[in-house]
Image 1 (spheres, helix red, strand yellow):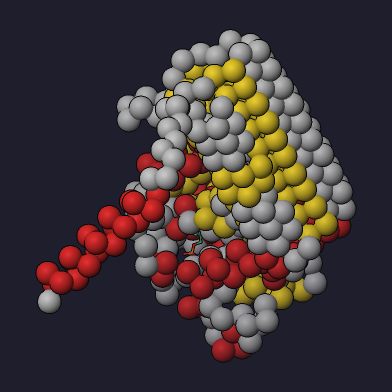
Image 2: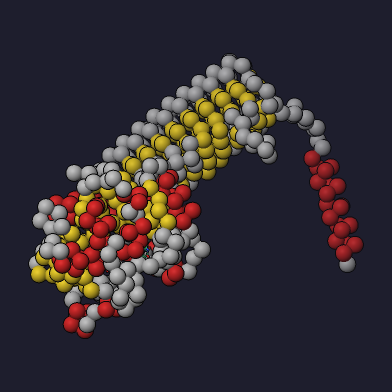
Length: 451
Ligand code: UD1
Ligand code: CA
């Protein structure tokens, strides 16, 4: 049966104390919204609708960056979760099957939990995801007998006895799309908050003789982000899980608690990740590669047998083929390093192609930017770039060519050639003592004058 998703993301998130809409705050390098969209994507939804409101433009941009085809509806005024779902109606026109409602600020719902909700739909017209809360606080309370759900009472509207219930509403709800839209269309707002509560659809369905049910999950899954403190908690929870998963998948983490993953980091089996390594978005590390201590990687690919760091930075577009060696204080951006390239120390390679087996000496810099445009440096196979070579792009160094240390290479170097782009050395025998003598007398004169 087809499934659609509605993701509620219109709220301002006042308690974040931020200019940024809440769902765009990041956990593991990705906006909260992407986490929710990824959780829902596991159901292969036929249609995804994001309800935006505060910062709608930025929110829709982020939503489209994750899923180009997703629908966006704008809820101009935040009149409640039920009102928010009702806004999705036009975007869901003609869609059949079930609809799952998720919150954009609740990043950790597991796909298995959503699957369990869809299964429970065989038994109930409306299925709500609940959890046993350690501290039920202001969550909506589920009035239920076993799996059978009678209704949901919001904290504000609850009696003392109802507030003592610890089974709480996560906010995730699932029902037949047409039924859900029909129900939210008939909601009232006669309650303590004066809002159109999505939670009221349970009672409305039951009044029509339909049944409602609860599926429960661990409280950790329903962690919602309302404050910066909860954002930090969410980050910690994500990282703890990502580290455990990496270890489980056969990755060595020397000091797991110091490694930070992004939502989409992929690390192959038998890779070794040293202490204090940070992965930004878009990184894949193949099996058996090694990332040494204190590296920062983002938007890059490291192949089997390659080793990186300590203290290296791989930026977007860095592509390291098998057995490439990248050493300390090396920065690589938008550059392809073919098999066996060695770039050991203190180097910047930006907008470059480096052929297999080439050695890049310490202190090499691709001068890729002229202040206006970026230019590419092309280095062939088995070339030798002497230490402290400045490669002023656009420039090409051919296969097997050699550049002398300290060269500023401004013209193409043909294959097999040696290029020296530096001043010839001058030697003056016996001059050093005279120069030191001259410096000393200058210093003495300055000290005298200062008195
Ligand atoms: C809601 C539930 C409550 C549940 C809790 C779980 C209702 C009435 N209450 O309460 O039972 O225990 O979540 O966290 O549903 N949103 C919109 N438009 C709106 C209102 C909200 O898009 O008009 C979005 C918010 O951005 C947020 C989500 O819906 O992502 C939940 O809204 P929020 O105001 O946090 O609901 P709670 O009062 O916490
Ligand atoms: Ca909330």
